Image (spheres, rainbow, N blue to C red):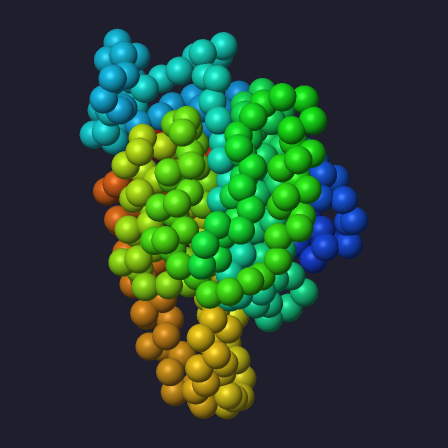
Length: 304
């Protein structure tokens, strides 16, 4: 189920996610992760250090058609605008799901902790590129909101907000993402970090509110390895962390069907996101974060 490892050179060494939990400072975590995948970019034969989130964005009405990259159109059958160094002036807005299901962990690191590390690393990376960075957390509603800015010291504000995120109530994708999209007055890159624990129709509807406002949407689905593989050995009483409903389950009887349903759901997200010109990336919380970021940036670069 892990969609990243095939593009990562086997000689690279990345940081175990559980090691990150022992680092006290979120800024130090972000710096450690970013320097790790930047090192990977330097050693990659496929691309250099010049990977930039803002290098391309999907064509939107009003964009200068002279900036359309026709080579990209020939490969993807989609219109993308090529922006050059000095022209980007981009904003990255991080959206972190802090609903109750994000507190799950089958081992040392919860999905929420992993999501916090990912958000902090993306923010740190964007800030190093002199892009404006903003942040929102949500569960059934907006919990925290920091507008995107590029001023000195603003990264600290964003990192402090990420650090205080706690698992709250159940998810309401549509309500939350509609409200967030209304607050984002400046078009830019929007990174949604979530386990997507809700009905797919609601998830996709919420994401489309962000995309249809002209944002370049990146969706990071964060899942625990136990959720991906359902390799529980014994029968047990399973409790839904969001609804508190209970079900007695014998894993051996339903494992095959569970994995099939999950594969189909992930495939649906990939297909629908691609159709609506959104990026989708699945991340396993047992995977080193710098490896996941390296692989995602490599895949995005190869797409364009």
